[in-house]
Image 1 (cartoon, rainbow over the protein chains, first blue to last red):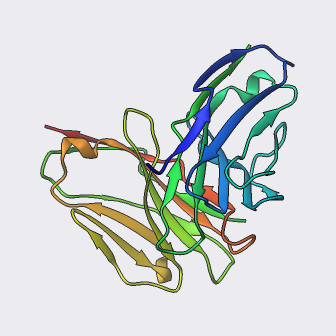
Image 2: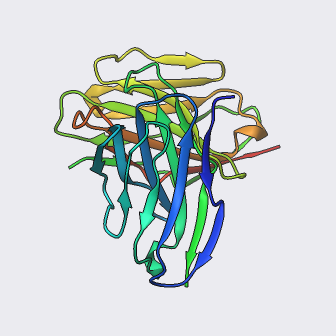
Length: 114
Length: 116
């Protein structure tokens, strides 16, 4: 079954404690992205990756890092989380940027930073 | 800078009515992609459509249809004969040609409530 998995699904942490949200896809997709969703602000892209070792900033990259060492994985790293990073996070993947390609989303990770 | 405006924050319709969700975008690029996504109350995100700026043909998929008008920078989404299962937040988005159209800007979403 084609899927994007994220872990953990829920996380409560404290300011400054480094954390990683994992994202993995089983479809051999080249393109992957991270988004955050906040009430009233909609969805905003954090980082995206076009392939292994190719990543770039979205609209809100501050405070986040990513890596793409393998095609299937695209972890999101918060080196020193702050309360303003409390949000709902989604990972997504797609095969190409073509008009016919479906984009798949993970189930979301709800992060609370105290 | 890219911008996507979904002026309708919330819409309520009675089941079986048709409803159109508006999306207006701003971009300086001549090529770009437009998207619609659905987020039902359960919270997951569902990709609905991706449309290339060169293709202005309307798209129909079952009860869903999309009207792309480059002249007015709009990419509106119509649900025909709405159903309760259509209740969700719908997001419109735009991507620019930088980095293979992977940089995406979203609108703030339109919450649709279909009343039985």
